[in-house]
Length: 278
Image 1 (tube, rainbow, N blue to C red):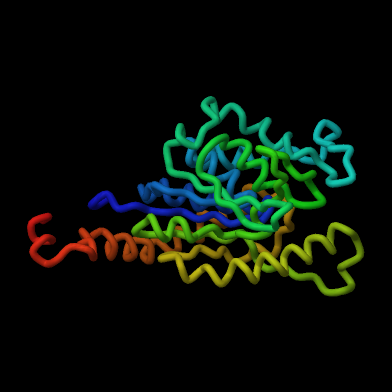
Image 2 (spheres, helix red, strand yellow):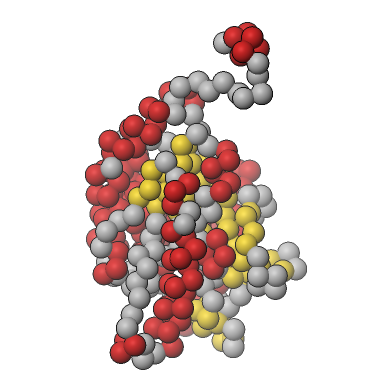
């Protein structure tokens, strides 16, 4: 990329709807746009982690599609969640032979929620798989994850769109949302899962949308409201939706990259110092 500009990619949570992230990455690959920094929450941390490890978009889609959550093998047998979050890492292990952030091909940031303090934490060092497990542990569905003496749950609860770190470090920031703010009416709220989903959507969608303006290009695929949080059966449709959406915004992407590809003079230089630098 011209002048070695730093490009950030922010991937929101959104359950299996996050397969759209892989479709967006496929579009970036086709356009030869190579983000240098990635940040993700929940499913965005899974996709972002794989992408930062050098896995291509098609393989990311296949990995996510083949995560079979509701098996006896994955049951937590715990009052705190139906599923064991440790099982999240099993299909990811082959892609992280060196399970350290420092070994990744791109700079990666993952958000997680400290269950005891209620605060969001951004992780960029240590074990990648531990960070992903914490970030993807959706409350009530997954049991909380213990890590370094602390207890964590889904990063999407407190920071579903961790754009702030990338905004400070990157010249161009591309954001992708897999949260359609899908709300049900009272007639549809007839199960514990429907109620849980509604509560999460209300809190997460409102906290996420206010951050979109921090991105130079924002990708919000239309039609996501047709898919549920755990809808893995329509992986191809979701992947294609992400790809088609970013390709439709190709001109916007090009303009953002061209606008920010010029050499920027650091503000702390005087005019004479800047001249010497050039």
